[in-house]
Image (tube, rainbow, N blue to C red; front, side, top):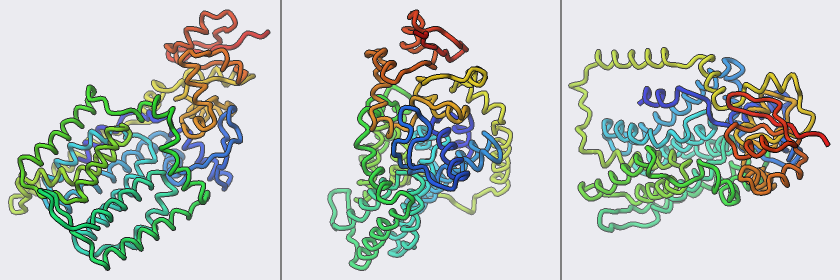
Length: 463
């Protein structure tokens, strides 16, 4: 499983958020103060902004300072490996079958690839696994270190906005123990008064711990409001789209749903109410927005491991230590030899971002506002500190202020000139195959000042 995660993650640094994450961490560690307003765009410069991921950005920045792009890749891989090792441990404790747990994790890893990359949400999923492991132990043994959860939520709130998912999962598990009974193959056991009191007290402590952050209530409000205010982002950004069952990831999810149905019909597995509730929550989230397929993988894997209990259990007496050691050595050799170099990572970055235009921007600094492609904003601002972008991948701030709508109007060729005039755009830096690129290339009022293999830059004619 470790080698599978590595194989799926070893190439590329394609997530556009990493560049402004690095920028944020650099600002924090250099100026010793938190960002409270936009500093990177000319469209919203000074606009109030909450950075809910400040703590999760620091490991990436420190690793970049130490080892460059290799450091960023290393942190990404280690975070993803930690998630799946935690998931394997949870599945094993839940099912009691180590082989079935391994198979379940191998299957769902392909759903999780949607978040494979230099993303702070990987830390959020580490925290989610820690929460699930503690609560699983509490349910199965009647005791667990619940005191760990408030500090965990404090760290989580300062690392990524997914703490809200953790609080919802916590609430669903507690609520599932408020009833007792058996309904066909679904059964529920009620918490004892002492257990319920301890859980509610712990949950209250977790809520209080959320407010230990540099933004106070503003950060809490941001995380709660974020999913409900991003209407344009949900409609237009790929990771917010629903699952497409025609692509490989959708087919894997369909196979997973089919496996769950067949498992329910063909086995005598008795479903626990909290297992069913979490599985349904994960499926709904993953089907609605593909960015939550990783969440679906985490919530469904323990149940899948139980349904795979037909797999013969592990038997220590037939284990072959020498063969296991050889396999581990082979895995380590594969990882060490297969780890990408800085040169390889730079080449992958150049395939996704307009590195080719940077020398031109250095020798010909723009003398006016630049309209840039959405996915390029963070990269351009990180590599050229004198350039303030039109937009970057911080969808929250740009949608709230209306800039994202104007950008969508431009790329959709809905009165593009009105938007260009509104922001007094002097330059346009876009991919070669965009509709706006075609329009401006046939407009005598705009001239090409740079053209590369993937990007083109226009300048508005004076007059």
